Length: 208
Image (cartoon, rainbow, N blue to C red; front, side, top):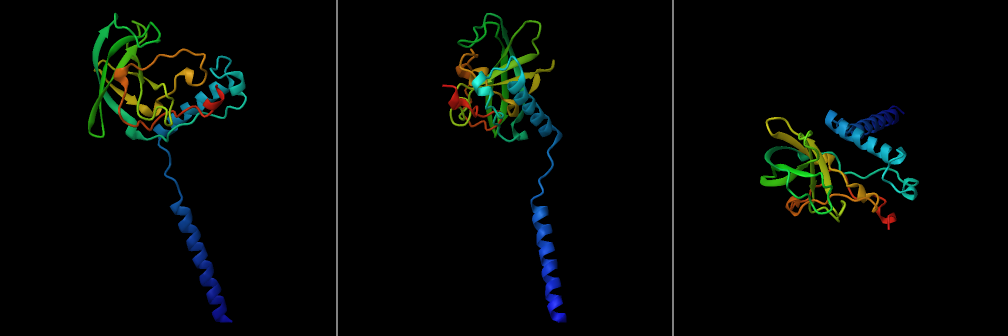
C-alpha cells in the first residue's frame, strides 16, 4: 500500500513539474514601451475609421470593418537617417500628387549593410520640419497595398531624424478607390521587402 502512495505522489510531482515548465516556456516577453505606443496608435486608427464621421471607409465596408492588418512591431525597422536638404519650390510633385508637395531633400540610411535613399517632401513653407515620405518596396501587391505606402516624420536642426517603417501606413485610396492619393516617385522604390507597418487592407476584395 505504501509503495502505491509513493507512486501516486511521484506522479503528482511529475504533473506539477510539467505544468510549471509549460507555463514558463510560454510566458511571452513583456512588450516594450515603444511597442505599446505603436500598438496604441494602431488601435486609435481603427477606432477613427470605424466611428469618425469623416472616415474614409465606404458605408458598406464600415459595417463589417474589424480593424486593419499589420506586421509585428520590430525595432529593426526604426532607422536613423540623415536629410540631405534639396529645397526646391519649383520641384514638380509626384504624378497625381497634391500640388502643395515640395521636395525637402533626400533621406540617406543603411539597412542590413546596404545604403538607400528616399525623397522626402514637405507641405507648407512654414512647416518645413514635418516631412512626408511615400515609398514602394517588394511587398507591394504581395501582402501590402500595391500602390505603395507612406511615412510621416520630422527632423531637428541637425538634419538627423528617425524613419520608422513600423509606422508605415496605407494611402486613403487603399480603403476607398474614390480618394485621390499621391504616388511614390520612381526614385522611392526600395528593392527589398519592408515587412513592417500596415499590410493590405483586409476588406480590399469588397471595394470592387
